[in-house]
Length: 331
Image (cartoon, rainbow, N blue to C red; front, top):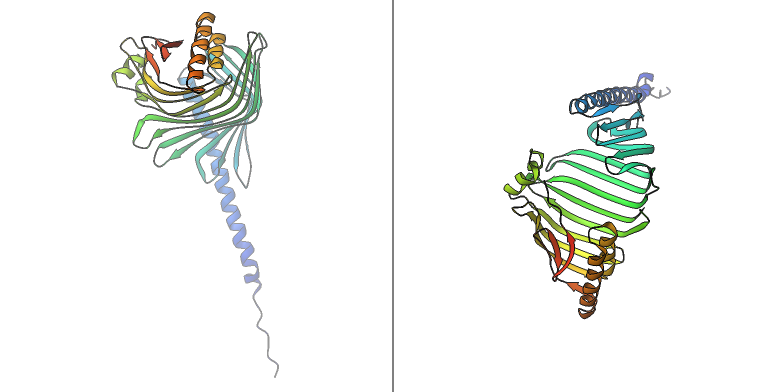
């Protein structure tokens, strides 16, 4: 008697493929639902911005990316605040995971045009430019921005800029939604305008702004002061125009709404900073020359580094009795 080999039913052979097909079909439905929600969100955002006074227009909105991600492509976006600014681009991409629309990545494609009152029209592009906004369990929301190899030019006079890299994130503090925290790092900024050239090799800062909700009132500066608002600089470092400067401290507003406070400061090669303030008009050329001479002498006698607070008082900024800038009155 011959033993018979048990035979597996064909239905069991097909079962894994059937299960995979069901999973794929379910995922496709999820992706389609996400695509539909993203298009609806774009329409709702446009309606909200128009209600707020902005002018918004765009071309077709299409979705792609299945199965790995969800991407909405918005052609010819055009957003403007009449009389203030206008931004246009060739395309705008919105990226998200189809099963998690709580984190949205925004990236423009191609050339962009930005015009603003008093700054003219700038035409530029970046090899890498991405912004994201996401819900956060402890902070409510987080906004992040990344830029790399960006360059632009102003049409009217040929002023131009280049930026090697920028990384920034902004979010409310975990223990106080009205306090905003900012982390920023930038490298390789070059600006040429009005026959002058400005260079910043590096910038790093960590700061927080308390009572930020007061800035939405009809009298933001006065309301912010009354709420005891403060700009707290936990860390600031800049390598700009051959000057290296590190700062920390807090800034508030005095009764006349001028910035006031004392910032712990370390300053190396101060002549570059004086030259920058003179070129930008923050100081007159005579004041810039006096600042450069006074601070350079102070740095030499201090071993090459000045360690003294920058005092913000009565509408002016001073370090060791040397004026370095006039301060604006905030409205």
